[in-house]
Image 1: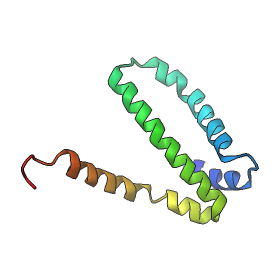
Image 2 (image 1 turned 90 degrees about the vertical axis):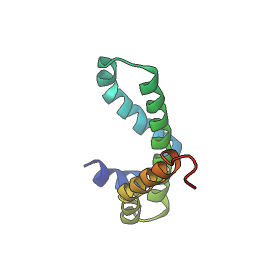
Image 3 (image 1 turned 45 degrees about the horizontal axis):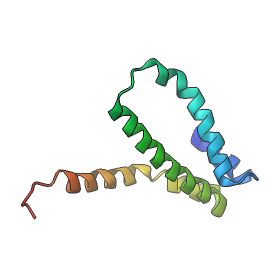
Length: 104
């Protein structure tokens, strides 16, 4: 339901994109806060959470701009390509981080 309804709502909204992103993230944060507080926190988890939040913010900027600059169908199709981008990222990460020294 989230993907199906968010595109048209974003396209019809008159609010600036940063404002939309703020309110969407605030709502999601408040809904997940009880679950986050239930689990213990450590430095590694917090670092990964910050990185994930930054990447999510970049995704939202691209998605919200796509909804404003193209049709809802085209913007949703671009976002639906996420598995392809994830596969490319994993392949790139393996090449960069798991390469054996001297195997160039």
